Length: 206
Length: 87
Ligand SMILES: [Zn+2]
Picture 1 (tube, helix red, strand yellow):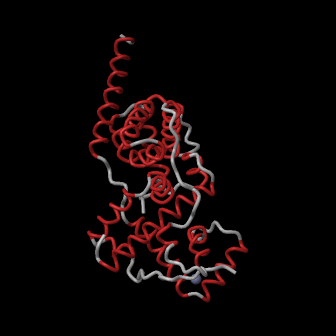
Picture 2: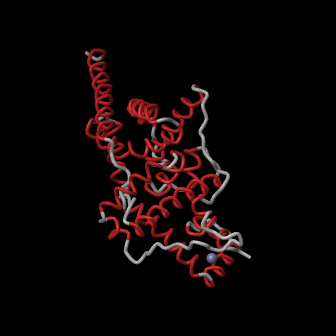
Picture 3: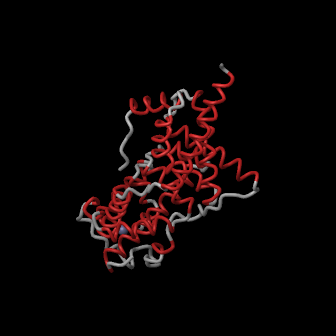
């Protein structure tokens, strides 16, 4: 779970950013760049996403003067990135490619009998705590591999919703997707992780 | 009647509390009778927990360094700009 930034910590940081303090910018860059990349990657390829995020930080130097703190620094930054990324996408006349048509992962769908009951039921054992499981370095590596293999759209939705603890409304707003399409992206990503952990537990292989 | 496959399709909505009361009731009814789906919901929950325990937002140190450089360049440019305009 991400450590939650207390309002007062954010306030101190914002004051630092407004006064152009280099240390404050360094701290903010470390804290917020991963989330901003997750937003940008929803819309753009990796190289363009890095470029947009870099440009955003330079614009933040001036823009932060008008930041009023109504939305929280993280949400504000994510919106700036989203707007820039959308503009960039429009200029290059490309579109976000995402499949919202089916909520069930094909690999999971294949495990049901025609009558809709489980043919190959889940075998994942969940008696170990997540924390204990994560101490298994191989599992952690495997999780990394599968997270990076997810379609960008699914991964971004997952990151913003889980790791960054955005509310659904905020994610929909930032990623420009409907609530039901966000549900599809989240569920598809989670099923992939479930399948991966199950395979890993069963075979010890990634 | 809700089948296992239907339940698997809406499992995340159930976990996140995004289902209406009627749907929640039929999921709960199904879970009472179906150990396999109970195990699926439990596993999906565990997978989500696992992912959250896994700090998946590794920092790209190289990108951070490039951003720091550009930001401090801009900050310095602003500062020296102020110095000359404000003798
Ligand atoms: Zn069932």
